Image (cartoon, rainbow over all chains, first blue to last red):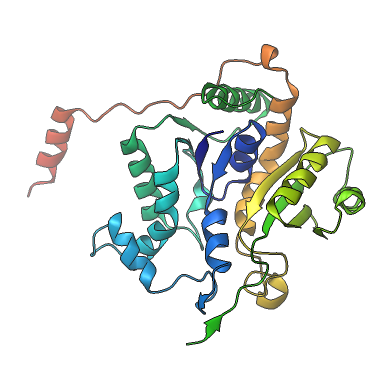
Length: 149
Length: 148
């Protein structure tokens, strides 16, 4: 079983497919769960304290907005833990009320720089693309040593 | 500053999404209750949320998937069900995270179709067209054209 970073890190489809084909998906839910299950000082809603942007300095410089650094404190350790990655290139919803375009760019940049096995693809737009999408994921995840399904 | 005392420590929560012509979230919830053995199962409009000890949830999830493997999709959730920081009963409006699901749920039918096709019959894997790098001379022309 290989730890596979998924991008968008909240993706239902990628999370399911990675688990379905026998690997462990690394998404933001795991980091958030770890924080909200740890006793500390109350810092709602995500238990992200002022300490997090300091931890994010490992990934981004001090002049980078604290929002990016705070997000990187959550997502960065997962990125370092990952042994492979799957990136959806046209995930527009990852930028919005809860997302951050600069963090997304930084994550993709850092993943590519790690030179781990990475699959880049886009969301399927019809049934034919659905077949190609699943085939690409199945082959990639099988090449990592997972079970065939 | 206030002390934070977490609830549901040591548990995990999974979302179960049903996009099936053969089984509704209500039917799936009933089946899940029958085999859940004390796990917290919450029915939602799109499927279920299951909360409990990791190994018990994993076992239940495996069984739930078998009801319709190609049309049931599962992902992790950070918060337990009904958490006041996330539940829209307390916040009003859409739950944070809803928009991601709203975007991906219509695509599930394509993924289901891809899963139904056996690997032997499937086609070439999807690739992403690599964008060519910008030519240096074009870049230079662009830069010069911007000069006053």
